[in-house]
Image (cartoon, rainbow, N blue to C red):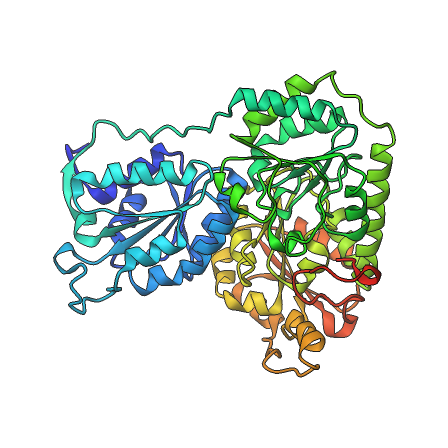
Length: 553
């Protein structure tokens, strides 16, 4: 090895030290030194996305399933801007992601010279959509900046971090660093006196409930210990699978259904762990949660949110729950009828949900049967996901569900590709709508080029169905701009090398999906909603507080 190397080579080597196995991006003249180094070193797989947004979404899905750092490369200017929506999604999900983008030459930087790929104040744009953003201003400081950026991305609360590097710095040669080791990632240690106090309070309860969010996914084992002691559990969408959803003490993600809210009234405490209690999962903060409300989080901003905790323990959720489980083991005297009430509430909620997604029961059942106990369930923002995908399919592990939490459509396919890269030996099933798939339809080619194994269920209504439902409810039924021209998806799939199946009726859904999962490569299953019909209950956006007679979400 030479005593000198380009900054591009050094950062490629540093990513290897960070245990990065795959990166995603769109190659450009303003990121080529990085990607040339990755290609020459042959230690990291590079996935060639068709768009910068797609690359970041893929890195996001990869990081969530791999439980590690996701990495995406873009060019500067327009390309960095194209990535912004996907960065917002990663921020919403708390995904540890490193976005590496180019920048024009130092001589012309911030001078408004009209340099190709120049963007005015790009760093401010990146700061707005990232947990933090850095600019490398000299070759000698590049490694230090990247070490800080990776540490920042992985430190809780995790999130996407951007680093922009001028092209001349990427090319610059410097001495090989003596140490490429990443910075240590610390965990927020809780105040043990506060944990003791919390344990004493919980020990007095008879009907305690856990609300588990995405920030508790790595605390699954400790959370399950508390559930085995008699705690009930309910999760946010991002916290699904922390406790297996077929567990007798789990309410799954039925967190805002009327029977569940009525059950909350019978609980004498709720412990919220790693959740922001977001508006769309709390009836815009009108959901009546049990009292007292205790909370465990790493973010002190909890105290500025609509639900004010009666007690807050700042600390890593795993560390806190492990101590609580140790202290409460053998010291709980719970109501023996507690779990009976929980199970009744869940069954009622499930019945209400199932009634709402008629006539698609056979499709929902087919996903569960074909997927079995071990598959990755990826969903785009589509009316079908809001109607059943977010709750009806049972998940057994905290990293088995991937969903566009930020509310943007058109991200599911890319996240499924990233998930399949992270877990090539597992089945990946992805639910999308025709509107969402068309946002980044070019990434279907990425799936074939990279040889990923995914099965995509395309719910084709040939319109923005949720928009039409809102127009019916709030705009006098006036249907403006919500119809969509749909391509011939069979011809499209064939042209790209995808396997294809169409479902005009659902009696063969289980066989179709089972065959798709057994078929190597990518399969598109188009569900013709125009033929099968609409959902029994029209979904018209995030649920809000309704009157007593019509309150089911």
